[in-house]
Length: 442
Image (cartoon, rainbow, N blue to C red):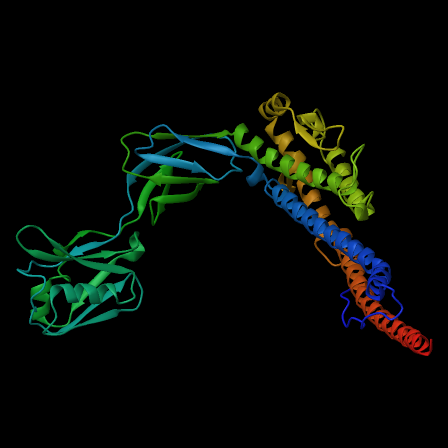
């Protein structure tokens, strides 16, 4: 609290200003204590927010493992990727498939007749109409002053799924019109509005189309299939085939479990879980380590959250039987400090021995009778931190309310100190006046 309005020279010989300063400083200790307490509460509130963020990260890590397609990481390999390449999105049953390609999908390509120049007016007027598949016709107007470049640019700007460009073969110029989508359904039909325009451009002449729009034709395990593009999905569930060229013999696509990818996802969950545990222990204290902030020492909100998560980790998964019924049975074990640790050898052995049983510990999938733990983790995090009645949200709101109440107390105390300072000055002024009068009499 600043001291202002110094008294005139003391008649009593006392250090009046010094007395007032010391008395006000003593009185201000209460404000300092309140401010220190508020700082601790605000820091505790920040710790709650950081802990909640780590819980959210844990939820995301759990969600990345809670379905069969996410957990069951697989790799797809091709016996000859120069003909057919393959990638797996996970959740695919391991096995092999034979693929044969008889025809690739293609987009239509049509070229105009030749022109001596691309930048000289073609001297013809009319419209070029084109229709893509069963769509509505699109018209492009041509004026007598348009060049071949102008016509190509206007076609490209028509808004249709079509592109036109001008090419030079070393002697003459042509306009190349190319559909942007492959497949039978995207064939392009041209018509020019005048015989002269037809004779000049020739887009509607059948011979001008040198590549037709067509579907890809192929077989998977002898079953005939067709697609509008060469990027084929759902022919093999969870696998994307990239058809590169017609095959001369069957290409073998092999789908295999990818233990390394599965372990990477499980490790991400373990890391997120350990981040939560470490943050909770740092905030509230653990063992011989004191709480980073006394406000949160032994805090029930943190402790109860960690206890709930620990119970899920150590529980037997409903619907499982046999060798693998808990996370610890596949090498994901709790340590003495409450964190998780993966035993690589045990985990890899479990995945190799019975990948389906291992997946049931993690995923929720009615098709295989799985009620794994990852959904339980995500649900627990929501209940702990993601709604107004959750444990951590209530704790954060309580701390915010306490900080606001302290702000009010600090302001009131500061007003009281200001009044106290004013009273001291008034009292010392009166005393100095009395002393001065007595001195005058003497």
